[in-house]
Length: 208
Image (cartoon, rainbow, N blue to C red; front, side, top):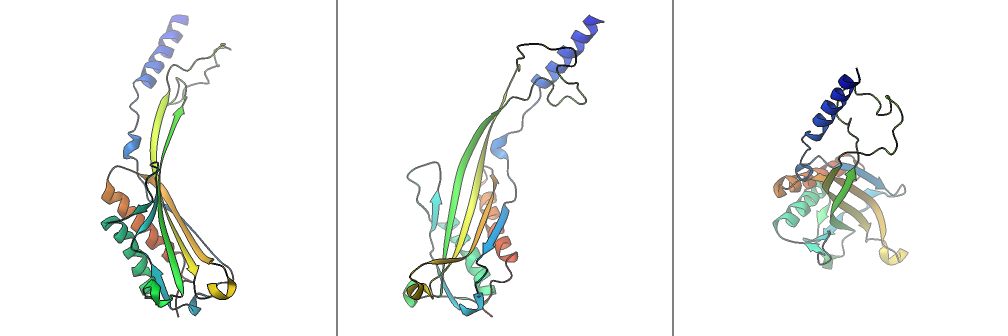
């Protein structure tokens, strides 16, 4: 009987040790979008806006400060398209716009280690101490992972009343985040989708 029990335990261990782990570098998902607004804001009092054609960029590299080029322009275009659809007019910064939009991207790499135990992933396996207390208990293997995440941040700032109030008041913010993979185009599309979603769940942003 003891020999049979030992065989079953070793068989379960071999299944867990040979288990193929997912390639976390390829992990991707739609971004989770969270929006918030100033409860006192009346968005219909604003008619014009300005947004830069460059995007603030923070990553694991200390030299990254801004994102330029086609990818940045695609994100900016998504903002412009949504603002135009809500009745706002884009004007240059020199024309004293009513609203200013800050757009930023954060890229981060998250690494970790999981100690799942030898029974991890084996269907219906018993508690490891079912057969008695064994001390010290050692995990025979670990699982390491690296997940790259992306975050898109949008802020809508009141420029119309800034001189009178002597402050730049944020009327609305959107933070969109999720895992990204190695496909740059797919990651960009997720960022664009997130911007569109942030406006979809903010119907109160409209000029009329």
